[in-house]
Picture 1 (cartoon, rainbow, N blue to C red):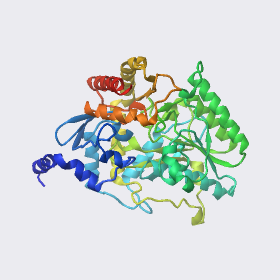
Picture 2 (picture 1 turned 60 degrees about the vertical axis):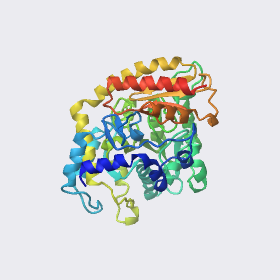
Picture 3 (picture 1 turned 90 degrees about the vertical axis):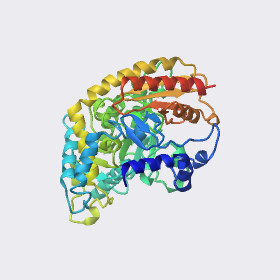
Picture 4 (picture 1 turned 90 degrees about the horizontal axis):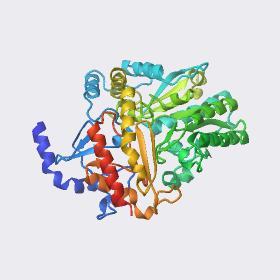
Length: 469
């Protein structure tokens, strides 16, 4: 169809897009009744026809600033031409091939380059193997199954069957990933289906008592983790955690000393350490990977979201040689019999390679440090607002926690729907802020410019003042 005619069709249909959508679509992570409703408690639908940079454009030409990187996946802006061109070139040669028994250049090169930039630790064998999956939750499933089966292959089953995760953590919504998550909203209804995991206290700095800093809070949480390991000798196969930022749990942040302590405890007790870098990897926290800030490395590292710059779904699980070797056997039952139809999809791998090229050519991390400093400056005055309990930041992630009177122990009544009202008010002003409860956060594409940051800060302040009673 001619592009001009197509665009005119979209514009002609703009008046009834909402009813058409609600007739056929079931949106993710949404109480659909809110979309069908009206008034202050209704959840609006934002029609998007195109994107460019930090902007989403509707069929009527109205622009909205994407302050949340479209669920944290977009790194360099919408429709980034270098990534789009790489996908186009790849589509002309090989769109997909089964990766069981076959190979292709994009999958091999991407694995080589990911391993080359993965966190390292002096005196420790590096990550040497890559297993591809389709999305972040599937990547976590892969890592959990690898850790469990490694011990089973060695003959340590049934004792080494337990997983430890952190309170308030989130690792996805498939059954295994949900089992090691600790957000009741997501897991409560499925509890009868989930495997039993153990949860260690979160090192979350927001939980620190008055006068205690983030490092002391992390040390105390690490001490509790040590006691948990001591109480279950020889039973734990892996600890899984989100390094530095518990994203879905409210952008709660913690000191990197906890990662160092966790690494030491896993070594002492013979358990694997799984890093869920899905949301925090690829420059979000100020370094390429969050684990680098602790000077240690995991045994298994899960990557997704920003891996393709926000263009296509892809996940990668990086593993040590020791883990890989634990599956080499004459018996097929000891192989890792896990697969996805689109494992190692060439188009997604091409997008990921273009993403890594941009990191190499544009000095992204240095630019992000400058941008993060500007974000901090613009957000600092928000801390003085009467209903702001905390303004916290790790790299390109900044969160503003709202409470009744600005104290940490006085959250709003959930029935007041403060976050929802903030979301609606921000949309009316051309900014997409999708809060986590009553926590507003900024996680913009890295290409955001000074005037766009100023707009984001101005709208955030206006929204807070408008919706907090």
